[in-house]
Image (cartoon, rainbow, N blue to C red; front, top):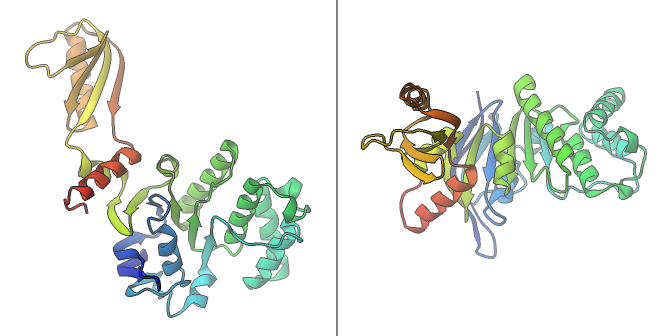
Length: 308
């Protein structure tokens, strides 16, 4: 089932700034989609359009069949939204904040209590649940904000820089929760971040955006296919027969590289070298990271080439 569909979605602010230009994409239910780009690229504007907080200048979108501009209240009934600087009530405890928002979401009191306690435990906030929110660290506030977004068991989850201010262990726990929800509960996650290395750890598909334009969309393999013609195979080995047709290049002592089309070629290469008496200590396929792909697409865009 299609969870999100955007067609020719654009936004020009009253100042004349064109924040989003003809965005076209669709997502299937259960995807963890990373919407990636630097600050000012158009990520937050896109979330606001998809959640009905802004009206598009042109184009349209649907979230599980609902038009955000036409029925924002209906949309918010099955969507969870976590922004980088979510506003909650400093004079209430973490638990009281969740109970208050449970009432806003229309949850019955006992259901709100049970759900709040469950989320506080999963996000390791139980020890601080009765402390005033004003005493919380940035990371604790972020985790409570995620708990608030999940309180009413949404089908869609929009996250804007969800790990801002979190320590490495908390990031791991949040990532684990996101992937678990997508796999076990079928929640579709739309995650905005400028941290491409982080996104590569948690997301299944990606959209790369710059200056309001979508550069490319797909999984990691599809994105790599757009920006590189070959992989680099790196070997640490001894006694390699460097024949004219071997395609191996010595780059350092006992270090060799060669270009291959896909990782599936590696076993046959290793077997052939081993049969010829080569001692192999290490084999690595040097594949592009999301950062490599992003900057390659930016370069291509600057050169005026098509990028989608």
